Length: 456
Ligand code: FAD
Image (cartoon, rainbow, N blue to C red; front, side, top):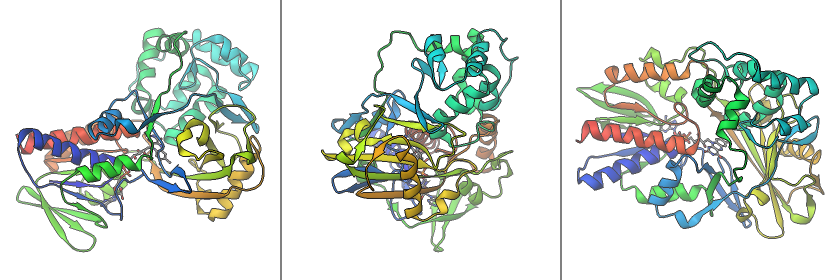
């Protein structure tokens, strides 16, 4: 068997296959094939001058168990750290406004925090309250997140609250993003309660204490990757870019860029979908109707002496409103949210840059990206001087766009690929969830399917 791609999805698939083989005493050759010179894909932690700096993801949701379960299986539970709680803000008109309390993905569950909010105009609030009175949508299979929320809560609510909250996850155009693939629970809530506000109220009990939702590892997420790489006994190839697959008598010949070949009975592809589509170029249904290219984003970590930084509005960071003319789309006060990352007496702020239609900033030099980010940051955080050092990371075409019809498209692949390419599965961020727990779940699922087909 072969697992193509050594990000978290591929490594999880390999680890799961190994576990199942250990449990059943069944053995089969498995090779992990990774194009770059390291494993982990988007996950990359940098240790510098006592700081733990994440260049890609910085944490995972605890509510979806798969990442926590993997951490436990790998014996890393004693390394787990949960985020510090704190207010989060939305940047609008160069000012920070608190996100209304008791909201679920931006949808208010109580009226008072919405009415008190400085984020919306009086008209915007009145329009949001219409949600309580307008009839539910007639039954539909899918529509865009933007259309759905704007129809119920109004445009302002989408631009100034919902879009900024979602942009950290998808960095895309909300009017192309599939509701069913990203927030299907809202379809159900609206159908059941006839209103998003009433629906949010059911999901968020009024007196529930706020608890930390995210976790990471003390030495950064790369320690999860390192532990997986140590635990996996299969051959793991680096600098091995897959360019082509050829069918040969019920098996597959995998052709690498350097001309070398491998043979496998089954394959799990865990690449960004565009790459898989190039490799399996004889499968027209892999081309998604209305496909949108992945969005490119960047992160800028800035390390300061604590005395240089005064956070005026206490909290853990902010996201920028959709229309804010700011280079940064979000910022995390990492030393406050994740104190273990920062030596005492220092401060660490991580800014995000780049969003759909505004990715040109990534073509600028590091110096310009840092300067622009710093200038924007200084609008809302008192910063004296320049960072002691900064780390810019460009993650080109890194955020998959689940366009309207995404789940339908996945269904079609599911029904068709198995006929054309038996024992070949697609898993990872391009398909059924972008978060780390989603990727681990998909890696596990593909491994179990292959194992059951080829070994049981
Ligand atoms: P990848 O990590 O992209 O791995 C795919 C691998 O395939 C890569 O190593 C690549 O080199 C390799 N490859 C590509 N082409 C070939 C080829 N032809 N042959 C062989 N190998 C190939 N999620 C969270 O849960 N929490 C967060 O805080 C979070 N923050 C994020 C912040 C940013 C800036 C980004 C971009 C994403 C973030 N995510 C977060 C999402 C999450 O990081 C990703 O969805 C996840 O890491 C993707 O894992 P993957 O294994 O599916 O893909």
